[in-house]
Image (cartoon, rainbow, N blue to C red; front, top):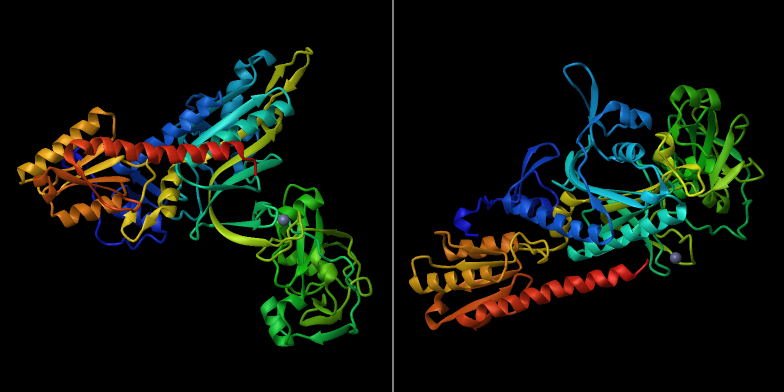
Length: 582
Ligand SMILES: [Zn+2]
């Protein structure tokens, strides 16, 4: 394609709306434009990248025996109501002229399960894996980073249906392989981590994370054994064995007028937050409980819910707290709290002589000790893991890393098939619910994650597999016949050989062309400038390396050689990850 025919409105200024580097570069390079909060246009260059990512996705999904279909974006309320997901906060709900309710699809478990329950009868028709690449709507409270977290985004979602859990595990492994290969072929390195299942549900699930300082997810990883998990999910190892449980101090009631927060109380008493035990009053189903964590820690509500075997827990309201503790909010403590169960984080077991609320307005206890002063009903891992915490699998410690979540895979089991009565007839003549898995990759998020990782001061550096063009030919002076001829020859020859090539034939200064070529990050550059008079052109890689001066006649072959070696590297990367099981 000729740049004179290509719409790519580049910007010289760094747009003020953008914080993440990829967001700035995609706006500057004319890949995307903002329409509204979390809503973006994909301009031609951006859409070219999207289409190339989609092509890789299709190749790898098809290679694993999955089949592509397309479901509607507009989904009747009844389907989401069948599984209770109509209430999800992220759902965009709308009504038609007859007042019937719909949602924009945010994930399609209900729709696909409906297809399968109507049309699949027998175990003979299994296994089945169906996928689509589609635009989704999600009412994000905090759209962020351009297309990293949009309210409208393009996603691959796949759904597997099997007759047994063993078969589901096989389907899951195939998708794990497909996803690992897709991400590697797009040039990225993912780490696969244990994660929370969120609005999708199911027991086992993993996320594919791209390490990036600007990422909004936190991953904890043990360098010693390789255990890795999303901070929301990450387990914390126990290290309290053999520690003394009762300290030296006597229990003392002290006045703490108006001091409610950890910060206020510790400052007022001249203590550190790790010398205090936080008492949090929670509602768990129809029960009220007290949860204890060290003062500088955060409670993990999902862990607490799992420990208590309830679906979710929520912070008790002020009224409940006051009736349970007999004090205003901010003074709850475990001592004398006899009417509710006390759940404590393992870490509290190694603490002595600590500060707790006194269940009395404007008062705390100091010198509190376990067993002597109060009893814990249930111990567990209930805090959010953080940097330096003990690894749950070995004697190592966890390191905290920032990451962008790019994909998420789930073993759903019969969660949706049972809720929706989706059954098949097995070989033993019995009706059984389908055993399902679901798998998603953020295609438009990938458009941002790639330049977030691959960039330099001059712009983006696209891996060849997803670049908007594989090669750019820079015609520095369109008025110069020799340069024109050289550029036309290389351009046409490469096109004939099936290379995706852009010819920058614009009437612009050479400096502008160099800047734009670097900004939009096409991996191979061919410069047709003054050397054309000597029958030579320059070839260079955007990612760095020396400029090569090459005879015009040999240039296309050299470009093809470079192109093949760039693809080769990505293929090797994909082969390496598809055999590795982290
Ligand atoms: Zn470890």
